[in-house]
Length: 356
Image (cartoon, rainbow, N blue to C red; front, side, top):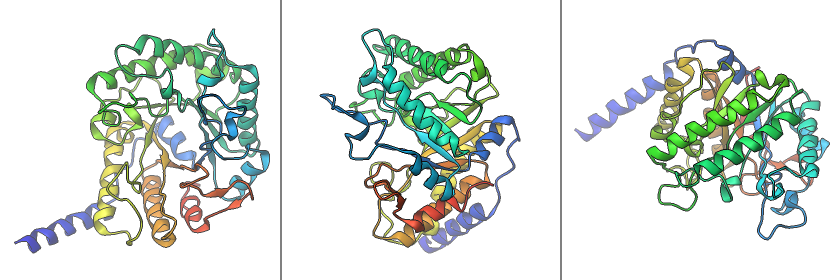
């Protein structure tokens, strides 16, 4: 009987993977999300922070400063978009104003990306270590700082065109609690309110921000169904959803490494996860991007590339774009010191699948 059940489940898995997703409504949001193509994260750079604060936060996590040549390499390698994680709390004065030198540096990196005719995604990354706390006690203060930050950022970039996208929050959550990654009903609703407040501030900031594409996210940018299905979508045609999906790392998934070839069971789990995102958002005309994904295993590159290709190609088929996480360390794709691709098999598995 167990063999019969196993065979039956295998047949269901195969049929599910073979059958195409329905075509999502081709709204502006869905089409724009799809157009972003293969994405890369400038991790552990402008988002670096340390207490006490070092002389240079950009390099304190071990990566060199990002220069023009890095983004030229990314463009030549097939990447179409760059997500720029930025941590702001160590660069605010007592009145909540962003240090001019820091904002200038962020602006410089954004320009490096755009000068290569790529999309740039600018966000708020690790401020959950300071003020971005999503519980009742801290909601008012966190919302005030969030709105204040986005007013300043939006005003600086008001004249930039649609190639620049804002990503309101990275993985908003309550750090250090038992529910840090799983969330609570209370925290999910707080994030909905914070998304709305920041969106309003951006839209009212002038220039091209009235129509700029903006990412919102759920609790912890989570792939957990209870979290992403609780995300409320504002009545705004230029909203997209940012989700994080790590099917190959120990703290996010049962798929801890790539020692084995991609199995049918694993394919089905990936397919089922993406289908959940599709049914919740894309099927309703809301664009979706997996703004962080990746694997740490570098001992089994052929199997790693197989997984990356399956995730990215399946996501692309249903109109999602994917941004691989690169922190210059265990998630590294690019050797930023030598300015070369560190793992061509992995990189090609992502960029060859991009939407053209």
